[in-house]
Image (tube, rainbow, N blue to C red; front, side, top):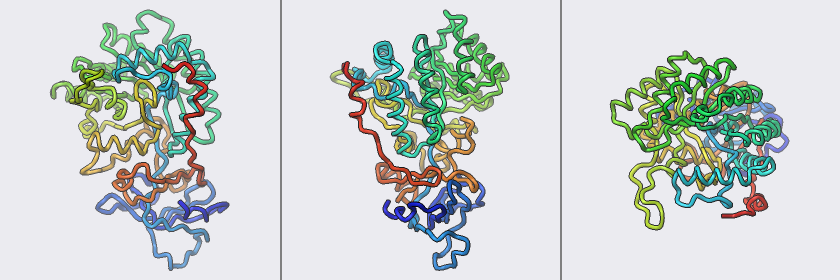
Length: 449
């Protein structure tokens, strides 16, 4: 926005007449109006938010306010956003390995083929960096990425991730969660200990894909014990199917209670919960609430993968869209959130790690409106807390000056035009919003299928 040009070189400035959501503001004692909004003046000194006060007429004496003042004309300020579930290692492989029919089995097969053929350290690093530049430009400051961790890929990707985390440490917070099918533990007794030690050494998260395998309870106990011994949090891919018989979410909750697991557990997808009868779904959600498990829905990816009927040349219209029971879980006090998941790969052909788009689409798909309530927490404070970054996803007096400025004056204006211009501030400074060109990846796409 042109009005921010006056901030060039300013160490201190005032953003006047801004709209905020008090539910995302700490240390200012703001009272929301009947729409959940407040009009404020925000003072920035260096890289820190030093004051957030109710707006006052600009003809008042500025007193201790800085000389540089920008009137936002009620434009909204949001904190930088949190993407709690992505797959940086898979991202942007679509041009060389597309999904033939948009189904989940095709995605699994195609990604496996691409991983074996192409995932060198150079390939993974280039695609990760490309994706992170997108996320950074869109205004994301915290990401959890899942990393395919079956040998020998784990020996390639985890060292690359550690390098990328270090390279990006001054721009965003990034950490990894390992990913493998839980049935791997049937055949490789030493695998869990090896991967858990790697995760501990890299300050990551222990994770797996859960299926209704015969030894599921035993494997969950083993994973939770390994995590507890090392002080690790857990992140599971859960029941990503329309089958009502997929009930591993309940088994995870029972295992957490049985093992008295003390860390944070985040369960992603949980699609089948919406296909179960009411009694079974209620029982599962009650268990999840008792166990303190958090749930992340991936509405764009699951809308793409789930519910395809007669895929191929003459597809039928989908009858459901793969979203878990977010409202019902939230009413039970379960911490719920939404995230990007895959980006331009066989699991999701689209996306750009833009959390404004994710929240907008989630609101439309899952009816996170009427009332809008505090659903904005699902991409801000809630995932920040679950990922153990209580400094992220909020505007805090005394906290970092990391935020996004919109011309839109409320969430409905922003979501009506999610592609409208926005300005991203990091450490109090306006960053260039430069999205990388897809042509940068052309050299990696030589074997296009």
